[in-house]
Length: 311
Image (cartoon, rainbow, N blue to C red; front, side):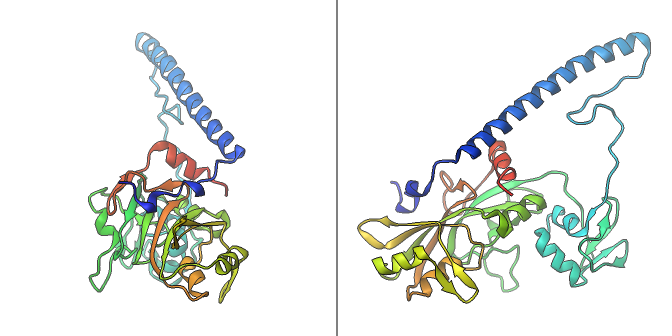
């Protein structure tokens, strides 16, 4: 039976022409790259066959580097190194560095922009970090009563427990969902992507289904559309509608703000209590075919689209 929380087609705007063109361009680019790799392998085989007959050294043409000589390893900012180690986002990593929790080759460092090599020894709170060479991307349909954190000193349930069997890599959530908020939550050890999706300037679109303690009046509906003044500034929604025409307590909202508890605070400012809150879409990804409390890996196309989101 189809749930009301899944019936949000009215919020799924058609993709802009620019977005469609970008997807097609990336698809063509991928196909072209694969064809070039096939050609490289073909001629590599011919060269190596000739080398066997003449005694010349053989070569290997990889997808990016056509010789066996390794690429030189350049330096990267310390907070980026920590993010790629699967500890946190780059922003959180910068705070850890400033708090004096990080050492590089035995020396304390407090500048997040300090350049380090992949061969350097970086430790966080005395524990050595290792940069992952394998990125993982997971979508979880988060249930209520789970904290969006990797661990909890009080022993409460965390989202990390729900994906414990997904991978051996250290992944962390992108952004947060309140303990009593359910829905789409992404995990990765790709620090660059996490930084991109978390940064306010990128205005990543989110769609929520809110269940209120009482019917939302037409007057308050208009107030929210026009913007609500909160303690940290004006809060706006991109689109809003009654999720069920017969039940004015069920509201659908499209919003891009990354402010903490923004949906709950918008309604609280007008005297409403949000009883249930479910994120049905994040950055174009939905929880379709993912039961509550379950997860799945993103496919290659989804990952490419995330990486080429407007920035």
